[in-house]
Amino acid sequence: MKRFLLMMAALLVFNTAQAAKFEIIDETGGLSDPTPFTPVGKNYATTLGEARRNAIEYAAQQWGRKLHSNVPIKVSVRYRSSLGGSLGWAYAKDVVANFPNAPKANMAYPIALANAMAGYDLDQANFDIGMLLPADTNFYLGLDGRNGSKPDLVTVVMHELGHGLGFGSAVYAAGANKGERRVALDGVAYDDIFSSLLYRESDLKPFFELPASERLNPSNLMRITKDRKAHRNIYSGSHWQPVLSPSSARLMLPSNNLYGTFYSKHDATPELEV
Image (cartoon, rainbow, N blue to C red; front, side, top):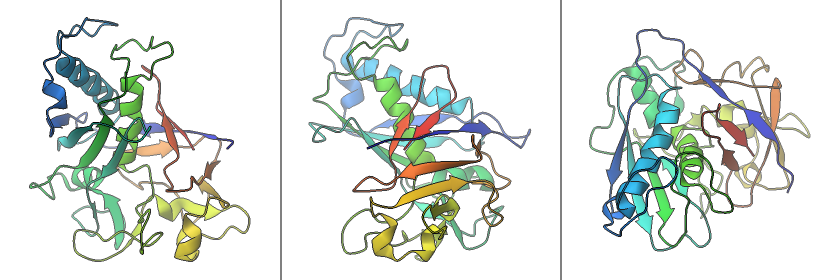
């Protein structure tokens, strides 16, 4: 399926906020695996677990330099024996609306972004981003991007963190509620900020005006834009606000969700390939 690039630069609008810090939580022991490791590509770890952590933390630092938040972003990392061929998966743990300093009323925001806007942790008992990684994949664990034919863990994690930060539609991807709005922390299902920017290219119908059965239909070509009057900015007046180039960009809908593929490069502006 043909893909299109959406260039995203995270612009920061509040000088009082500091660069975002990520807290990496090792949920399953994958980051403490004692298997011996030979240092490679500026990753000087001596065990596999340490090497994985170094790569994940390096990827998080690339995002952290681009984002402002006074609230640490908690990332739960779980290694599984296999993800069925997938290189990784991540999601925002919660979405939340009507919090202090929310730019729009009755609009759901991913928890990490909402925390940054509110200035404090709105859900202290939980992590903000959940990430799954496969233990059976032979990742390149260097930090220099010279991965050759191996999948690069830094790139994969940068990709997945993008989804966890909110670059994805907060609707149910499967099951009886597929395409329906995700329920926020207060128990109400609101439109989410990312999806509120989407519309179907064929008839310019906004995402949430489509029937739930059509929202994740892979035959639909969606577009995201900053130029439509009702969709001025993805995170209006907020801490991470992408600049789109060109003024609108296409999104292809995969068969199971809206996320597409997040593509990042070391020491480069994150890009979204969908």
